[in-house]
Amino acid sequence: MVANNKNQHFVPKAYLRRFSCDPPDAERRRINGYLIDHEKFIDGISISDQCSKNKFYGSDEIFEDFVQHFEGCYGIAIEALEGNGQIYAGDIARFFLLQYLRTPHMLEQRRKTIDHAQNLKVGGISRPEPMNFVQSREMQHQLYIAAAENDILEDLEPVFIVNLTSVPFITSDNPATCTNRYNIQKLGDPTSGLVSSGLVAAMPLNSHWLYLAYDRDVYKLNANDGILELRNENDVHRLNELQAIMATSCLYFADETGKAAVERAMQHGMEKRRDSWVEIWTGIADGVVKGMERYRKEQPGDEESREPRIVSVSPIMPKPHTWPSFLKLSASPKGCDTGAMAGFFRQGSQQAKDGKLPLIKLPKAQHRDANPLTRKVAYIKE
Image (cartoon, rainbow, N blue to C red):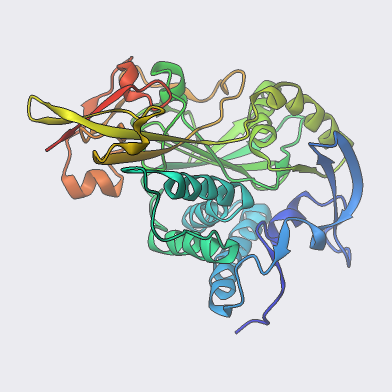
């Protein structure tokens, strides 16, 4: 068992050290930062003090042990990548999922969902039992998801991008990002989940390496044995924009070239930041049409109705102002359709495997009611 530390990191020191402004053999490692809300650069801040909160995972040592296990596997994998180019894609993919789920950013989206459920009224009555939001408990739930679904991204095609430009990769206090070019560009729908068709996962590993995983049935990338050499500075800027858009409060970089990269990323990224990255849609039962239950969007004044409700929670994905040139849409993207409100799934995802769904050609457009942001009605099989 590890010591019961009060100060617990949601982005590990082993990760941040790869962006340190100090040499690798320095006794204490520092990093340069940019405080987004204050629009202020801070040089040489201690890595030990960054991306941590008091008892973030609670007092039960088993949760911190779990986290440190995946961090240890990641540490070995990144040292092998930096040392001799050896790739342990599975370990980095599992670390990506853990990192994606365990930040204050994700906790805030979970809080919004819980608050929505708490305030939902049926027949004029809210939930009889209050749902108290306890940070450590909710984070433990996120860690459980990371443990139970650690292979949820294994069907994605991993690519390790080596940055050969003079513009470095930057990182943030929310470094594991997901986006979906297909949904955003073709369907006009910024929402999708981890099992959706068209998912793209990206996380910088240091100033020169970035982990990317993509849906091979939707995109085409010209990688050589899982490595993509990047020579286009604009592509680096687009990837850095994802960090600027999704950071909670701070961006990190190593040197003056990193500072310039942060300034460039914030030029386009600032306008795309949001207060909320989740869309919660509530429908109220509105009859049956052709054997399908119809739900219309709940409106003010529906609080007294006793009709059944449905609630869908959809993550909103970030969009850089232009897409990286290497991330090309297939001429005939494919995926699976469950017929549910959740949209299209990858065939390799567990949802598709369980239902043994066939691979179909994905559409170039969708009905506005398929988009949670514009949906007025939803239909569900009886």
